[in-house]
Length: 71
Image (cartoon, rainbow, N blue to C red; front, side, top):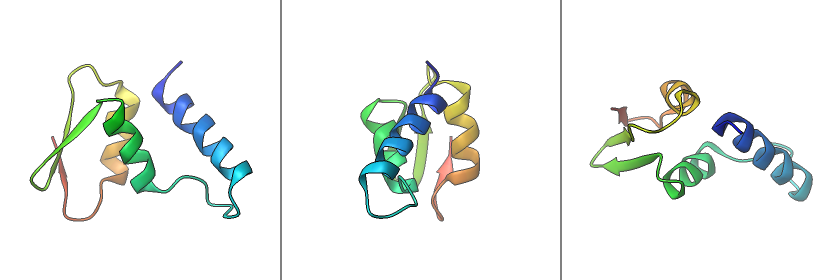
């Protein structure tokens, strides 16, 4: 299962269980990626691990928090 599918399923579950229809926030998704050790934070940079799926790289390129660079 791809990371994108995992995140989509988690977002779907969060959507059903929460009162907010927005699903997971970007911060929650970043937390999940960090827990899975796909990313780590160094200063004001998000470092993507070499073995992270391409979906993670694509998502981060569009959703990095303001002020953070992606490496």
